[in-house]
Image (cartoon, rainbow, N blue to C red; front, side, top):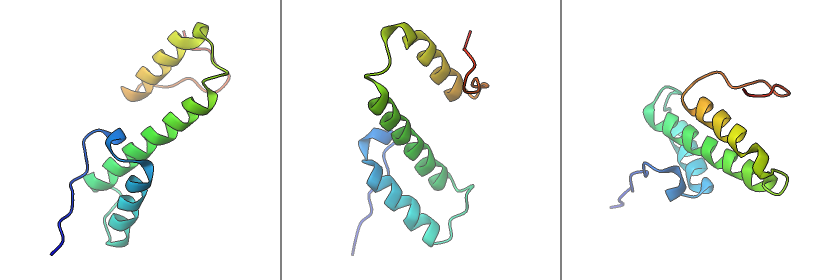
Length: 90
């Protein structure tokens, strides 16, 4: 008998590979895109992609853009419109 561990609420509690594996496992068993477990995996993977981008670019970002980056992230998370590339957030 095997036991399965429920996924954590916080995406950073599992590495990206584990979230990828869970998504693949769910999809291989016919879970729909609207399934809450699929949505949870996709949110966690989005988190890890964003963290990877921020990590890769951190040396290029200065303190002068901290407020803008924070505002854009807040707007994205709260489902507001995020400025297109090239636009400056006000």
